[in-house]
Length: 117
Image (cartoon, rainbow, N blue to C red; front, side):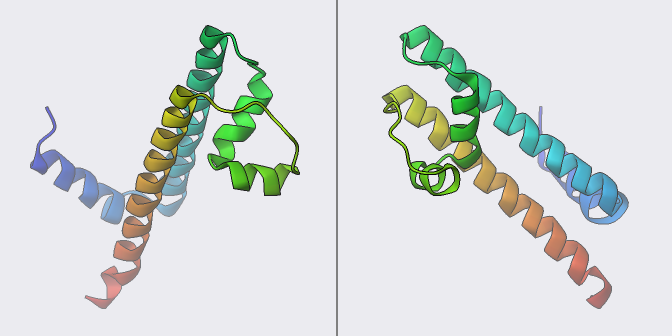
């Protein structure tokens, strides 16, 4: 079971003990796992729903998570409309990505301000 003490220990390690290279590797690994997991979930959902299930397309959608970003980055083209469940998965992916970025930013700021205390 997670307790506040475990979270405090984890915070201490990522802000004081873990080196920058390892910290960046951890962040990149978590981000890649997040993108890969949601890509596979969305691809499996499309397969189960009987809709077009091109893995590359699902990966590109998951990378950007927002239809406008997808259109501007990969060039506008008409594509299949996302189902409600696919949209829900993309929202979950976006929220977890946002949470990861906030925690990573807090760690970076904490480490940057440490010498000034």
